[in-house]
Length: 330
Ligand SMILES: Nc1nc2c(ncn2[C@@H]2O[C@H](COP(=O)(O)OP(=O)(O)OP(=O)(O)O)[C@@H](O)[C@H]2O)c(=O)[nH]1
Image 1 (cartoon, helix red, strand yellow):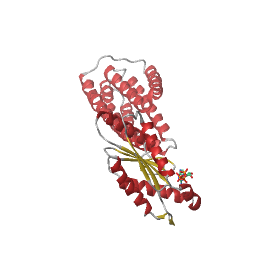
Image 2: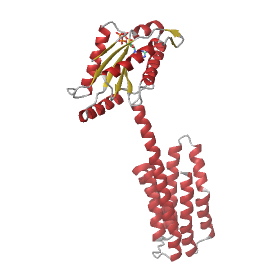
Image 3: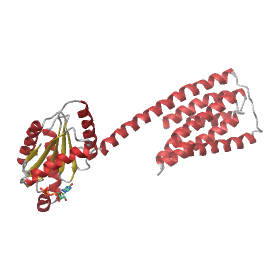
């Protein structure tokens, strides 16, 4: 904002000074214009920076800018070209900085100061624009509008980055560095769609930590959380880039394995179980970790995400019923 104000006041200074010289106005008025152009931006910057509410202070600064604009329009005897350009830029700028509410307040300030100064000046009005003033106004039109566009573009880029970051957060588990149900369901839906178009095989793996409640009860939630983090890490290490390991909630994890047969999924599941079995030290406690895993391949009858997840959950149920610490797949 500081740089934009310096640029704006400097670019306005040129056409206003041109008109004041043409109208042979007093040196004091020109000095006041110089103060507005070269001192005010720094004053405004410190005013906003020192304020406990910098945004509100900056909005006040923007309204003061608009009031100053109204004053100089009156001092230029409403010279049409610089007056219209200055008023338009001031209002458009306030609109992009604070919406219609700020623009409205700025318009009221500009009009009020203009009317007061114009009446005191005897309602002077000169409707002709000299070539000198026209040329002096051109940099304001060209440079300021381009600068405003550059600023708007950089705000749009920052907004896009923030939006992507928020989208990523919304798709991740709040405790572990792993996808959540939302992202998993999106990927499953996409995979089902692809499977309908091509003759391929893909698998869904449901993983549940055995007797996890006991771990929590014996060692506390901190150890339970650390175990969840270790399992999540194992799932990442044991899978490919194209797979999606996710946490459904509690001690339940699911992995989507595109282009994978049931046999291949069994190999991955064994790898995961072996890695979990050798994990002993969790948050300075010696614990045993076994997993039950259910695997389901996609079939043509599966119409939606729930069908496939249900099939994998049923397979997990069979693994649990069979005595836990085992893989069941069909
Ligand atoms: N530490 C920790 N525990 C959790 C979290 N979310 C859920 N739990 C606990 O995880 C346990 C899940 O237990 P269950 O899956 O129902 O039962 P289990 O003891 O694993 O038994 P089986 O699944 O039959 O082997 C519950 O005690 C929950 O309180 C979490 O984020 N952190």
